Image 1 (spheres, one colour):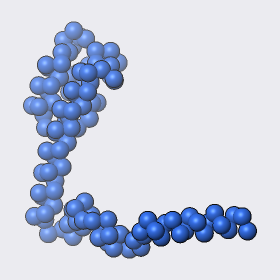
Image 2: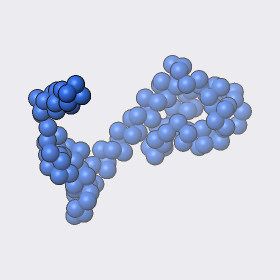
Image 3: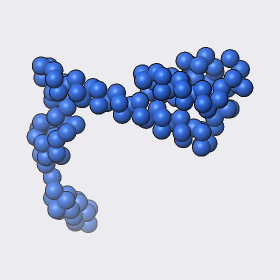
Image 4: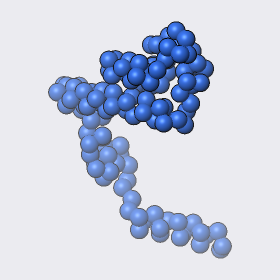
Length: 120
């Protein structure tokens, strides 16, 4: 495939037709073009690349939802723990990880004590 064969319309169709595309590299590999050719056609900071990445982001979002749904119906404790860590509050995640939850006030006190000890 040549550079002229790679159009934004074709790239977007490739992404939407293949829900397992999660990275830009998946796109140019599936299209059979080199990385150099792809980025010459769609520079990293171009509007077209932004559209490509947003479309890939839709695939990622759908995949994440599918995984979370699968995890919630699983009997596997590690999968359920992973889902809980994603959905839980910071305090709940800290408790699951055996981390001590710290408030902003605790952090400020610690920073003050460290700075104070430097001048003693």
